[in-house]
Image (cartoon, rainbow, N blue to C red; front, side):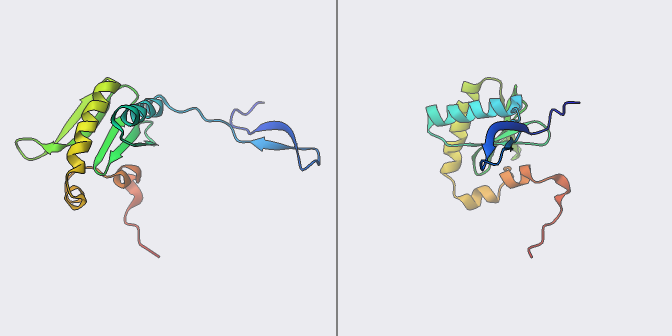
Length: 144
């Protein structure tokens, strides 16, 4: 029976002793990760903004643009919390369907956040990457 997760054997001998080297299976990126990578590339190529892509256990992906500026995607839509507040003082949620519009809006929000002191961003209600990547059940982590 073939196991789809089994390592693939490389046909090159290891150390001349006739054994084969195991090559780990190539995992395909999810549609959300591919779409997030496309957004990160546009941010870099068009706006000169370097961004990181992270896959979530949910299957969604995050594009980390700047401290407090995380764009989420399910592979179709992008959404993020913008740096501007609503009339009631709560953060505004932004969303876009197209890569160019999402990149343009994120670049605008990036410039707003770059002009603010980091302490102001840390003390706000904007999301942080560590909060998004840690599991909900992580609890408090005590230093050793």
